[in-house]
Length: 347
Ligand SMILES: Nc1nc2c(ncn2[C@@H]2O[C@H](COP(=O)(O)OP(=O)(O)O)[C@@H](O)[C@H]2O)c(=O)[nH]1
Ligand SMILES: [Mg+2]
Image 1: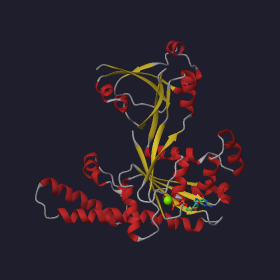
Image 2 (image 1 turned 135 degrees about the vertical axis):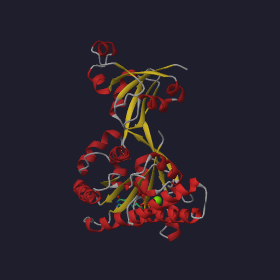
Image 3 (image 1 turned 90 degrees about the vertical axis):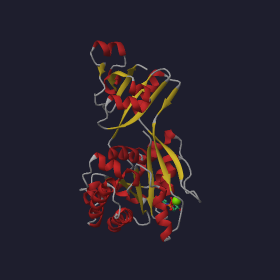
Image 4 (image 1 turned 90 degrees about the horizontal axis):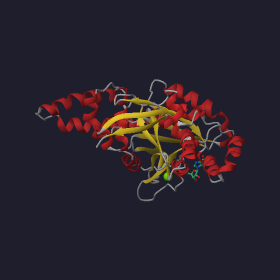
């Protein structure tokens, strides 16, 4: 699964700093958006790799998109959103690093971003309705009814993700890439002195967003974390501890995106490659196979699997088989996070 996350937010909020932190690459392209990959750290892959000594170890990854550094003009801000139109998720950075005590203004800033995204969708639905209102063919009549419903929700300030859209309805509007359908993570870029209070800040803001399961909040200091990432790996834990950072931002952000999007990982492991694959929670063994190759999906016979926790406790396939912990599952089996799978297929 190719996962992309568009970084939005006001100029000078720390978008490019966060992009650099996540991807290890420079953000802030002058003329267009910059793309970069962030590794999805996973200690389970580290362990499997240390056992199999594969030729190649592949972690899952998330693509981040940093928009060019436009400075606040109205047209600039709209353009900024268009750069992240085709992403699966959005990450909105709120700059709060100037003041140690920033809490008061945050709710307003969050609301401002929610409003901007909603307004963008509202205009999109209005334009579409205008365009198809005189159409006679039945398909477009259906579309008119559906878009009227979307429009009504948006006018009442409800994001489209709050609607219970049926699968065919979701399909019909997919091409529009509405912003209020995308999971949205807020990153509050806090003052370094506020780091010990990060969790309290998150909890308070989360309460405000609580009725929307497709939004999340993380408080972190992008600059401090970026500086720590510049250090040799073995020196990082001491600095993180000194700053009062429980979990490095790189891991926290990714973990939150996975949870927000309902994603899990399964693994394939062998002498050639140890690899993490990303799928949606609830995906079947057959569709997981399709993640690797359409041939494996088409020719699917069985999934031979063992859960990582069992494997880590007894890293010996023979013993695991004897204990009945290696199972053969059919195509409808719902893959669990941490399944190590060997697909049997026929082409
Ligand atoms: N003190 C502090 N400065 C920051 C932090 N994040 C970004 N900055 C600074 O704010 C300015 C704008 O950051 P940048 O990431 O380019 O913002 P962008 O316009 O949203 O991409 C730069 O000078 C950064 O060094 C932070 O967490 N703390
Ligand atoms: Mg920038």
